[in-house]
Amino acid sequence: MDSFIELKKISVLRGDRKILDDINFDISSGENVAVIGPNGSGKSTFIKLITGKIYPSYTGNGTVCKLFGHSRWNIHNLRSMLGIVTNELQHDFYNEITGFEAVLSGFFSSVGISNNHIVTKDMTKKADDMIDFLEVSSLRNKKLETMSSGEARRFLIARALVNNPKVLVLDEPSNSLDISSSLKLHNTMRKISYSGTKIILVTHLVSDIIPEMNRFVFFKGGKIFADGKRSEVFTCDKLSSLFDMKVKLAENNGLCCITIV
Ligand SMILES: Nc1ncnc2c1ncn2[C@@H]1O[C@H](COP(=O)(O)OP(=O)(O)OP(=O)(O)O)[C@@H](O)[C@H]1O
Image (cartoon, rainbow, N blue to C red; front, top):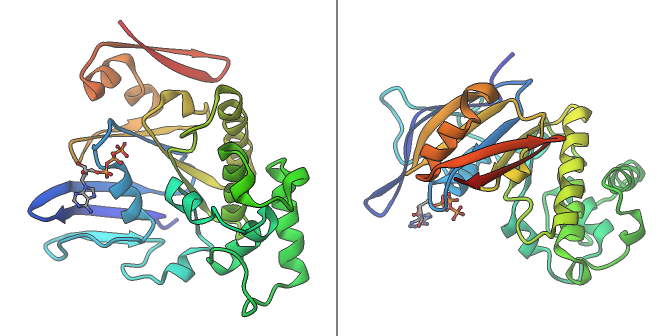
């Protein structure tokens, strides 16, 4: 099986500063990956790289940057393979768009539906199926701008799933959610992982981690600081080194939390 994402010796430069430095990363099917790192460690830049939004700063000399086997890609062609939900995206949807239209727009990689879009019956059915799956049918015709963050985020996850992507990238998904909405999201991520779509979860909160995450990639200072199986990387020692403070990790009923010791 080809890798979903293959990066070798990849760096990203902004001005004269390397904000991603010599990244080597490869994921294939079967992996749910948690990307964790402190603020400013390069996680968002990494997400932009693996979702085709930016290219590496250097190529040649053994560098590889492939998404689904291709070094060059068209964002529209990536959409059936890669679903993306970021806070930036959610911001784009704060206008007159209803939840249903937002989900439907996933078929066109657009923000909402316009007269140029030809919406088929199958698309409508799939959009409604995904709205059901995310358990927000009662809000289908409500405008996103009038929803809570948690509600709007569920519609954007449904939008990302309409194309049956192989991989769903969630960037800081519990940002601005209260405990109850975070817990709902937690359960939704578990449901998605059972449905066959793999998750790449980017976060600085260990409470976002679901038991199905089987690979952990830690970022620090623009570099991959640790990368491996859950039992090897998601440990008190590694988390303490990552955040430069002694922390204790506890897991209870599938929920994780860290405390400072
Ligand atoms: N376009 C840019 N121009 C200059 N510096 C940038 C740019 N984008 C990111 N940076 C810098 O690169 C570093 C990594 O940023 P990035 O947003 O990738 O980190 P992050 O881990 O996602 O942080 P956070 O958790 O705070 O969102 C930061 O120091 C940031 O200021």
